[in-house]
Image 1 (cartoon, rainbow, N blue to C red):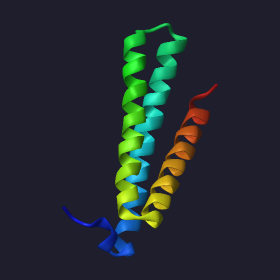
Image 2 (image 1 turned 90 degrees about the vertical axis):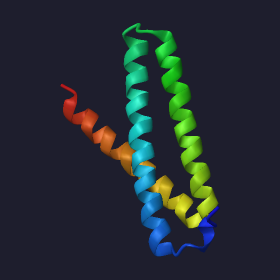
Image 3 (image 1 turned 120 degrees about the horizontal axis):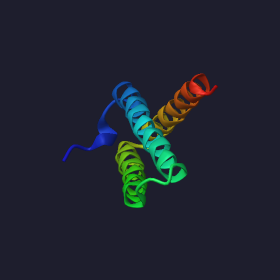
Image 4 (image 1 turned 45 degrees about the vertical axis):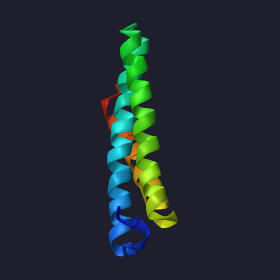
Length: 96
C-alpha cells in the first residue's frame, strides 16, 4: 500500500481539493434529490438509500483524505465548501 503522507504537497493539495469538489457535488446533488423526494412525497426507500449513500461518500472521501495528512484534509474540506457554494448559486438562479 502506498503511504500517502510521503507524497509532496504539490500533489496532495490539488488532489484533495478536486476530490472535495467531486464529493461535495455528489453529496449536495443527492441531498437535493432527497429533499425533492421528501417534499413531493416520493419513495421513502429511495430517500433513505440516497441519505446513506451520501453519508458514506463523505465518510469514505474524508477518510482517504485523513490518510494523506492534515493539509489534504483541509483542502478536501475547502473543495466540499466550494461545491456547496456553487450548488447554492445554481439554486438561486433556478429560483423564480
